[in-house]
Image (cartoon, rainbow, N blue to C red; front, side, top):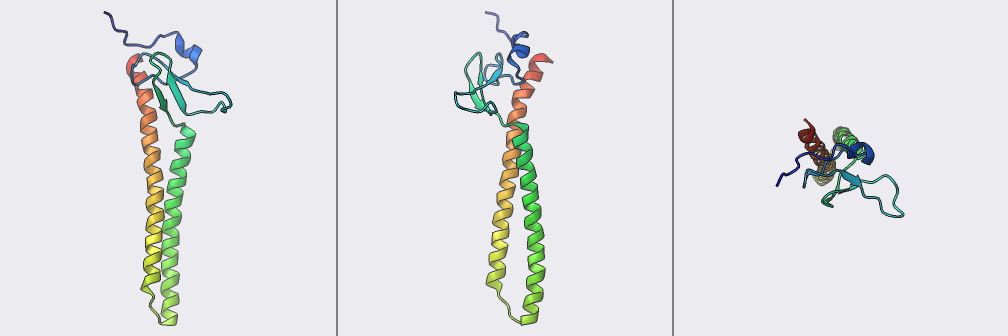
Amino acid sequence: MHKQTQPDPIEPPLLNTSFVCTKCQLGYMLPAIEEGEPDYTEHYTCHKCQHHDIIPTLVTIISQLGSGFLGIFICAYLASDHSSVLSSFYAELEQDKPALNTLMAILTLIFAFSFGYVIIQAVKGYMHRRAYQSCQMLNHG
């Protein structure tokens, strides 16, 4: 009972994929394109054990990171700008409306945490993608 530890060396050029299955570590992950679906896909299936997984593309990961960091920057800028405008406005009117300030702070935090969640999802997607690529490096290196 000799267990094969490396994927077939002939198959990668023919299959045009760089992902090795993390479940069986023998097969290559092929794009799972169904009829009517565009050629671009994140769904992959192992050609040996039929393991199915979603592997995010680099474009998806980069756009999530970019939008997350940009969103947090905009939230921070608007929060600081809003607080300075409100403080000068309230100083002129000599009124204090802590409820409005509290509401704006809560909304800013909600948006900032939401953009932080997008960044965390991008990092998780990157790590998931690297697991399939590092499996290949372990088998060939």
